[in-house]
Length: 423
Image 1 (cartoon, rainbow, N blue to C red):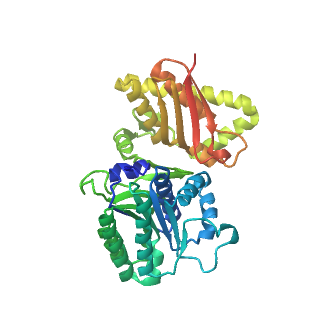
Image 2: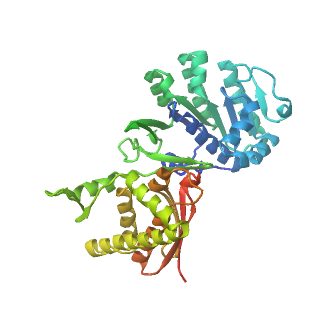
Image 3: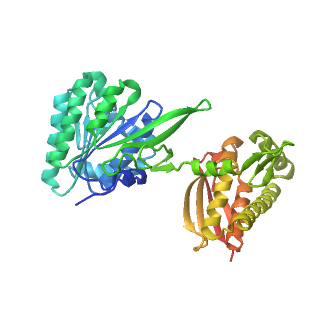
């Protein structure tokens, strides 16, 4: 058996095949620690579901709390796969954190090993259990997840943990195991982090930076066995979304804004011109106030009809402009229309499923309007429904309908739209 993928696209593209004998290190900060744990958990679950063996060594989460943690991370549906792996002797949980006996209802769970917090015992137990898995499942690859090195550095000191990680990495190459661990850079001297990164084969960072007083999380690859240091996507930062069991990166908008800057001008009389069209720039709250007043005075149904028709006109105007100005058509016209919406602040396209040729599209996006609307008991993106249908009609020449199925204003993590050609 050979498992080649983590099934996390961003990781697989940068790592290549999931070769046995590889050490993988995740570096995070305090803001992104929970996201990093969730991402590592997704990788482990995907590995188990594909038939791999797994050893989780947890220094910070007692086994008695694992069910609660999995449930809180929207991974409850994955428990049957974990339980099956434990029953088969393919998965083990090394509990290094418990101070008291296990809770009564979990004490009979197979695959749980409680050990003392000692570096030599931890290494011994990991390697011993790896060998036990290999005896019963000789063809199954084994992945070890150490959660986390920061706790052990605090307990044992950096020198002991660096020796531990080096020994685990060396053993991984000898035995063909995959070693995965994480460390919180906020807690340690940069030299410790750099040494851990030096020992690892593949390093991914989830961190954050301040933008306008708000912490913005991002992900990037710091080290890869298949990418040269001068490759573009090495060290490049990506915003990301982590929703349930999905981890998706959001490509940079830099090329879009570079093009915008080349096409924007400020005229003597005070006009702002973008792509040779004049704009009146107004705060989002002013736009929200206008639409909320229309919604209140017209009623939801009449307002939605008005907003969709208005949005459709806007969508058609966008595509007509790019077709006549730049002679674009088909998917290129659709791409530029979407980019144009992005630079105008409507939000971010997260995922697009389907195609123009199939006559069906499903769009998941972060909608600035819905995010800032406030809590609502109804979906609020009627204008964007109209814009999508107008853009698609302008691109294809066929009439489309677009329906919002999820909305951030009603509590969903993203807004979701389903569009299809009218028959």
